[in-house]
Image 1 (tube, helix red, strand yellow):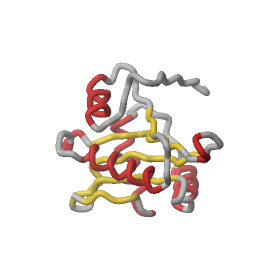
Image 2 (cartoon, one colour):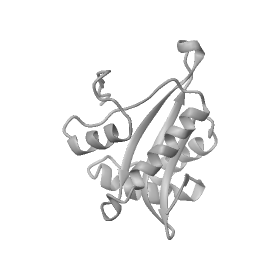
Image 3 (cartoon, one colour):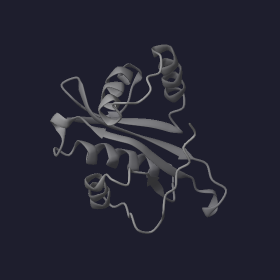
Length: 147
């Protein structure tokens, strides 16, 4: 298994994983997806997707955004989102490996913290995040749905 930052040709494989993560998600056109992907690929200092690949197949992914910040000595913070592992590859260390690579990217960028949100019902995911060092008790996350 190879853990790496996503490359230009990984869009389709990542989108296949997102079909597992959010099966009822509204589908964007390939043109819209390609425009967003191109923007992401042109900003590697700010946005990174991490993938676990085995024999040419993407098994897991997450993405991290580095956000500039005016507090904490002007140190940025990171946001990790869209963590997913293909069901056939679960419990093989794929998610942990992609998360560790994303956290390493945050360290390289001098982030003072990294956070993520997880659905409140996803208890197994919460246990996983806590096992790799996230603390689900120190902060409280809120979302505002922009429908």
